Length: 212
Image 1: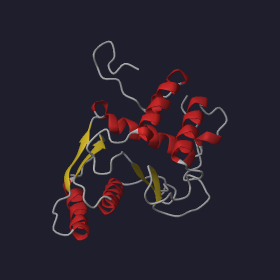
Image 2: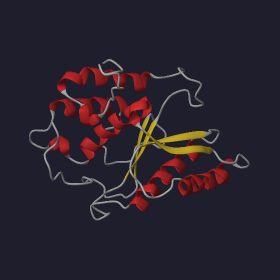
Image 3: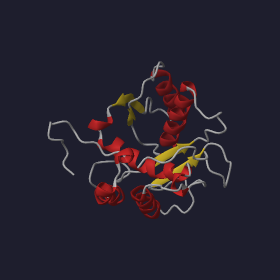
């Protein structure tokens, strides 16, 4: 798929844009994620995907802005604990928010100081970005979309997109994940961390038909 549209604007890979025509292209993106190694001077030598899952039923069907920011901090703290020699520039997919990211960054750095000794401020940057200009955010959106497709039960709905069913299954097989409702190993290429533990039930019952 070309990187730019005919008008010169950057194309964007997103789970919401997946179609039968784009399925093989999106599979190659997943393949590249899992085969990526020693291509950049990263301390880990590869790229990992970590996600936090929050059951929206427990949160009365929605999450407050403060609650959302708390989960960002929790995930950032996991990165600090897992990659103790790392220095981080965290780019978040853009969203409208009234709260500053500075308190979240400070909270994560406080934890970083606890786990990393004298190395101060491991979180060097925390800011929102337009995902059109960040391919890593696009890959994260694709993986997250595939996981959420199963977590929300959309794969079981009548009329569910065959392309989405196939790509989600392809991602789970590559990631060696047999059950999205269970925590994965703490360290893996793709990890799932359930903040609450309502085992063996979907996060949300799908209340609307899936997008085509």
